[in-house]
Image (cartoon, rainbow, N blue to C red; front, side, top):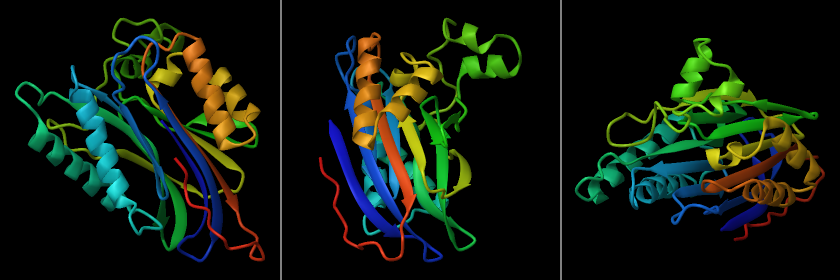
Length: 268
C-alpha cells in the first residue's frame, strides 16, 4: 500500500507551508498478516503497529487509523485534545468489535500532526509504544520519540547498553499501547515548523533492520519523499524483513508569498 501527495496549507498565524509526503507499508518476509496501518493525510501523519494475536492487532491498528483519518476531515490542524479524543474513540471501537479473547489487543501509534500553540503553527510529535519519529534537519538525524519498551527502561537505568538492547530477549515487549486496558494519552512534544525539515514516521519493522546511520543514508539519498520511502522500505526487506514495515516521509517547506496557490490532492 502506497499513498503520496503534495499540498499547500495555511497555518494559524497566516504562515503558508508546502507539504510533500509518501507513506508505504509491506507485510515483510516472515509475517502472514500486515498488522501495521498508517495515515498520511494533512494534518495527520501516523503509523500504528498492532498486536494481540490472530487478526486482533490488525483490528486495533485499523481502528486507530480510521479515527485519525476521520479527524483530518475538513481540518487544517489537529489539536492535542482532538488527537486524544480520536484515540479514545478508537479504543471504544476496539471494545465494540472485539471477539471473545481479543480484549488484550492493542497497537502502538506514533506520528506528527500539524497543530497550533499560542496562535502559531507547530509540529506536534506524539507517541505511544515503540514505533518512532525521526527528524532530518541540515543533514543531522535525530530520533525524536522515546520507545515505551522494557529495553528502553533498562537502557535508562543503565542496566544494558543500546547495543545490547538489540539482542535482548524482551526487545519486542512494550510498556504502553493503545488498547482497552489503558487511557491512550500519548507523549507529545511541540516543534517549530522549520523549512527544509524531513520527518520520518516508522514502525519497528524498519528500525529492527536498519541502524540510525542506515536510516540517515536513505533519507538523504532520496530526493523526494516517495524516493526516500521506497529506499527505506526496500532496504528493510533486503535486510531480512522480519516484521511488517511501515514508513512515512514528510517534507515541510516555507512558501514564498508569490508562489502559486494551487493544491495538488494526495494520490494513492
